[in-house]
Length: 419
Image 1 (cartoon, rainbow, N blue to C red):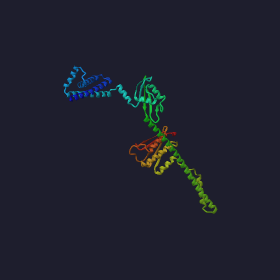
Image 2: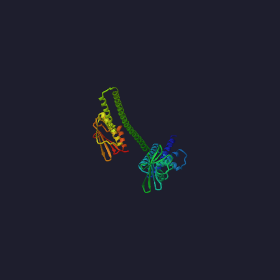
Image 3: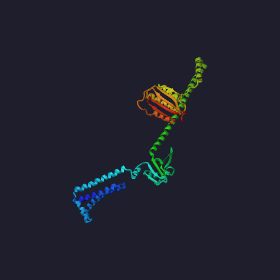
Image 4: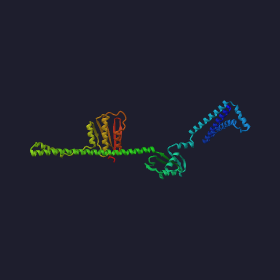
């Protein structure tokens, strides 16, 4: 009974070895390696004979007597030797399979090239002038089915559909800076390109740009929102100036009204009852007449209000050059003076702000420094400085922050302003 079990186990082992050797032979044929066949075929034959030995000795004997005599001779071989022989064959098959796998990784074959292309997210299609496809990957086939609703059979026809043909339902074509973009609302965004590699050979690439396109669209929306916010802020600023003017005019009117009313009452009492000092009444009338004849005081504009603010908080503003009066440059520089005043007090603990205005070609340059403490590290545009930079760029200029040799802010704006 034990002998039968041993033979059965050897038979199963031999069958497994035969199957493995047969598979190795197929892999060598696929890799077109004749040398490997000279090793795999003898192993397959030996494993087959081992399996046949077990099946013949355990089952019906369909072999001729000379064959049976040959197989019975294996019974005289010690069991340990038979097992060692099978282990040797198993080890050889394992080494051969590892070598085949390493060979596939080390060598570039048509199969490995095709597998590598299919793994790319970029659609690739090489085709002739007539559209006959030499090589195309899985991504190109998927994009073709998605965009045209058909299988990829002709490279030239697919390229024509991408750039000028009829797209599947839901897709739309857009041209951005000379590049064709295919869009699926709320989803995919593809960018096709065609290059002629050599006479008669074309390459069509289809890139999935969904994520970068979404970011660009989001940035555009944010830019539009910021622009709208800046327009509202500018309108609010103009309204504040108008309200300031109206309030000062109203205050002047009230003052004149009160002064003249009091003078008229005094004159009336003097004429009716003789009350009051005549010379005092005359002096008050002269003062009011002089007030009415005096030229109106200028209502402070943005620059004037900021200079007044600087004076109130104890910061001396030294101005070198002429501040522009045209918009939006005036609003940008007024905002810059206000922001630099704030930084001088809050961060630098200084009491003097120097503003130098100059011209560089078609641009106006404004250079801001203070006498406060220098920053302890790099300064990044954030908060008010970031808003100021955005305002300068919107006006067609830019802003630069320097910390060496001292903290400074430079703003460049186009002459005459940008509408």
